[in-house]
Image (cartoon, rainbow, N blue to C red):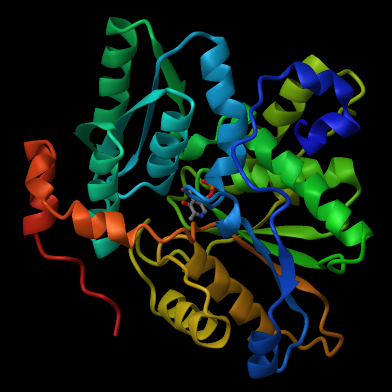
Length: 361
Ligand SMILES: Cc1ncc(COP(=O)(O)O)c(C=O)c1O
C-alpha cells in the first residue's frame, strides 16, 4: 500500500511516506443544508474523519513529513504556531505514534476556550512546550534549538513544507477518483481555508495533474503576509519541483499569483479572532447537519461559501464543495481529565487566568 500519488507517478515511491489516516475521506451531499438555503448542490469532503486519533487536514501532510524525519534519523519534531495550534496538536499525537517527540514553539493568539483546551491536550500528549510570544521570538528560539541539538527536524508552521503539501496533491487525486466513480459531481468551486497555504497549494497542483476542472477558492484565515496569492503560487511551484526531483514524468507546471482565487474578506480583524459571519456559518451547519466547525479556520471558510450561495445570481446551482479541515474526534474526556493547567510550564498559566476574548453576539 502507498499513497494514491504513487499510482500516477511511480517514481514518487521513493519519497518517505507512512499511512497514518483513513483515506479516502467521505465526500457527500449536505442535503439538509441545501434545503435550508434553497441551493441543493452543496457537498462536503470530510477530512475531519481522516483519523481515529486526531483528524483534520494535518494528517495528510504528516504522512509525508514524519517519515522524512525518521529517514533523516531525527528524534524531535520542532514546529511553531499559535498557542492553540491544531497543527501542533496533530503533530504531537501522530508523532507519538511513530516514536517521535514534539517541541512546540508557541506564539500569542486571541484567547478562546479552544486555545485553553489545546494547551491542556499538548500537556496530556507529552509535547515539550516553549513560549515564544511572537514570530520573532519563535524564529530566534528555533535557531537556538536547531544549533544546540542535532536530532531536531524542523517543520514549518501548519506543516506546510513542500513535502507536507504533497498530502494535498494526493487529496486532489483522491477527489478525482470519487468524481470518476460517481460518488460526487465535479465541483465548480472548492472552498478551502488558506492558513499556512499547504492545503491550497497541494490541491492546486493535484487538481492540475489529476485533470480536475474545479476552481480552488482559498479563504484567507491568517495574516496577509503569510497567506496571499503570490506566496501560495510559490509554494505550489516548490511542490512541483520536489515531485520532479523524484519523477521526471511529472509535467512542468507553473503557478502565478494572478491565477489564484483568494478571498480576503472573511478573516476579520486578526488570525484567530472570531467573526460574526463565521459564528453564523458555524451555527447553520451545526443545526442543519450536526457538523462542528472551529472559529479560526473552518467557520470563516464556510462563511465564504454561504456568502457565495446567498449572493450568486446563477440559477443553475453549480456543485460547490466545502473541504472540512477541522478534526472531529472528540477529545473532551481527556480535556476534562487534564483540567489542571498548573502542570503546564509557568509561562502558559496566564492563558488560564486572563479574560477570554469577547465572543461575537
Ligand atoms: C482546522 C484547520 N483548517 C485549515 C487550516 C489551514 O490549512 P493550511 O495551513 O494548510 O493553509 C488549519 C491550519 O492549521 C487548521 O488547523
